[in-house]
Every structure is written in structure tokens, then in C-alpha cells.
Length: 199
Image (tube, rainbow, N blue to C red):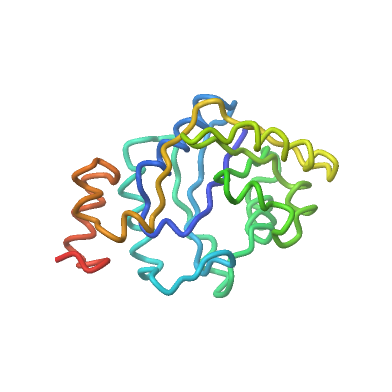
């Protein structure tokens, strides 16, 4: 089976995340997408992150209607920074006979050689990334050629996704909901738990 791994802070999960995962299912020969919220991200400040449990719950809410989506709490076991190579090592133990794919946004993809142990990641998974609405497809193609020299394999999706960050959602959750940027039930969860200053 082909399994795509989609890690992130998901603080909170929004529709660009789920659209990207849906595009992976459509464009790649992938049967499952596993969402893995980071316990502590090595790339981002977690200063504004809500507790891990809430981020996991929001992921479960946002993905519950798609049987091909799974939410994993694997990185909670690390109790420290969630480095991708460690996550993939553990997933390979769980899925030894399956092919793993790693989903990453364009920004992170274009800095991939700066990640911890990129060569080990290449040995464990094929990268999947996608262009944004602002049209960075050519940059992704050029960088994929750089990664090939390091034995890195990539798939670049054809369908672009909207330019949206969790920071924009956090800055005004009510406005994000009005603009249909987050799932209705995720918004209700945020409001019911008074997350991100929403009451």
C-alpha cells in the first residue's frame, strides 16, 4: 500500500491542509493519508500552540468524513522536538511492507536540505509537494532536480492550493470561519474550548 504522511503543527488545521491531502489522494497512487500533529515542532515556535490534545482533536474533526484520512498521535511518544526522520523510522516499523510518501508545503520543500538527516528521509520516503496560488511551480521543479542529486525523489502536484497559514486563522478565527477557511465543526470546537481567544 502507498501511504502519505502529512505532519504539521495543525495549530489549527484549516482547509488548505485538507485540500492538499485530498489532492494527494486524487493525483498520487496513495490509499491513505496519515495526519501527524507535531508534539514540538523543530521548525516553528510553539509559543502560540494550543495543547497537543486539542490539535489532535481538531485534526480528527476536520478529517472524520474521509475514510482515507487517519490521525496519528505517534509524535507524542517522543516528548521532545518532532524530527521527521524519527517519525518516518517509527512509521516504517509499523508499515514495513508499504511505500511511504512525505507531504510538505512548498516553503518547507524548498528548504529541505536544511532539515535534520535529509538523506535518511530520502531513503524512507518519496516527497510530495504542491504549488501555491502565487505560481511557484517552476521553483519546485528546479529544486526537485537539486534533490535528485542527493537521491531524493519528488512528486509535484499539478493542482495548486490557496495561500493560507494557521497564523492567519489564529489572528481572527471568526473571520476565518466566515471566509470558509476552517471546518464548521473545528470552529465550534475552538469556540467551545475557548481556544485562540475565541469565546
